[in-house]
Image 1 (cartoon, rainbow, N blue to C red):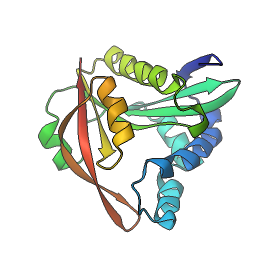
Image 2: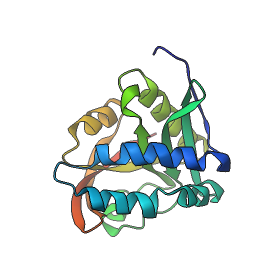
Image 3: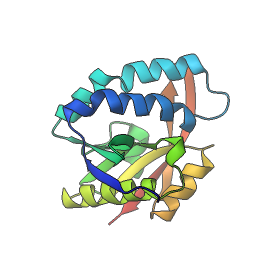
Image 4: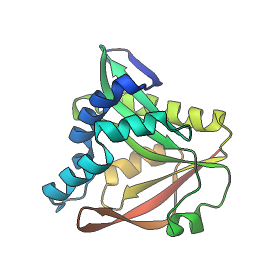
Length: 178
């Protein structure tokens, strides 16, 4: 790492910058063949500044930010709630559990330890809140992310579907147990 990364809990004033990072990074995690208009619709509905303000105000969610040189370069969104997807609930059975819903780092920051620091902070946050496991969904074609999660103790627990716009994608459900 060339610059020091600071991992901290995001606040409402970070919503616009978190959206900017999300708008750059979300399409990078989508599988080849994803439709840019579907990705843009997802970003507008799920990763807008307004939605980030909602996430930040929700007591069942934590947004962590990775900051380098005063700029947010990555974030993680943790949901401390029951899995709503029946496919997930069928394979993630330990409770209480936290979902690592989003975790992205700007492409210029890949490979320098920021994602690892953000992951360690996310896992520590979930464990400190009393969770016995963390789960996440990752696209089945995103091999790079799967390798990263595997390095951090995640294993495949099952599969689920994930919709982006009009497209249905297939994810692995990964689990990390404490």
